[in-house]
Length: 256
Ligand SMILES: NC(=O)c1ccc[n+]([C@@H]2O[C@H](COP(=O)([O-])OP(=O)(O)OC[C@H]3O[C@@H](n4cnc5c(N)ncnc54)[C@H](OP(=O)(O)O)[C@@H]3O)[C@@H](O)[C@H]2O)c1
Image 1 (cartoon, rainbow, N blue to C red):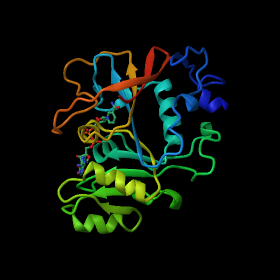
Image 2: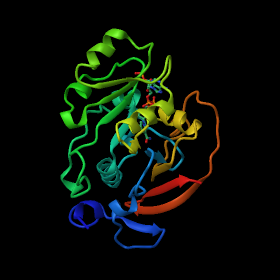
Image 3: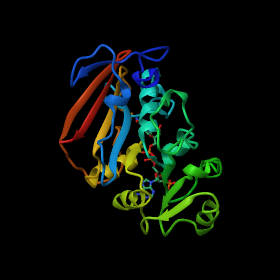
């Protein structure tokens, strides 16, 4: 067990497990391990919400909700993933850049490329150029876009990124997972945002939700972690794990 993935030894935040078994020192890598021997993409979402269900705060970003333990979990989840999937809104607002290796990953990426690529879903391709240009050769950014996207931007992006047309006017959630599977990327981590997540949940494609419940209230204006015009839907979830750190709860749900 490395100090990185315990999240408790050394200087990192301390996590205790409440479920499935109470443990004074939780091992994050073990708590968040993907299923072994996957034969299809496993779609995991990592989201943070306030105690009253809000998904972003007054800054318009998740930093109002996040905390050192939340960032520690995010780091481990990124280290475990084959690909990090985000909507272009999140990439723009949260200032996404290619994933950087973290010392705390320890041996999490043994036998795999040093970092996972980013996959960005977008109609406009209006994202920071570094998202494509600064990606290392082993983790070229994957752009999932539409036939209707501006041709010039698609051509420009294709100089450095892997551009996939995955729908006419709208990228189809199923086509995203198919494109990732074709590239052998099965451990999929989506970090939202709420509009993109709603499309995957509406399509019944979400396998796992890693939810941080942050000890704050945001009031009625904050959107939820699923938002937008996707059709309403209900799905049962089963709680597989529950950790606590510094007053935040870290809940791992899988499809019920
Ligand atoms: N609480 C959390 O855990 C969490 C997580 C992530 C983000 N956030 C917050 O959520 C906000 C952003 O959320 P959001 O829901 O607006 O953003 P989002 O879902 O990340 O991005 C929406 C954008 O993604 C692209 N997109 C989504 N579905 C598409 C489809 N089917 N086909 C083609 N393109 C598609 C479009 O990009 P184009 O406009 O480029 O076409 C769309 O405008 C930010 O404030 C962020 O801080 C919160």
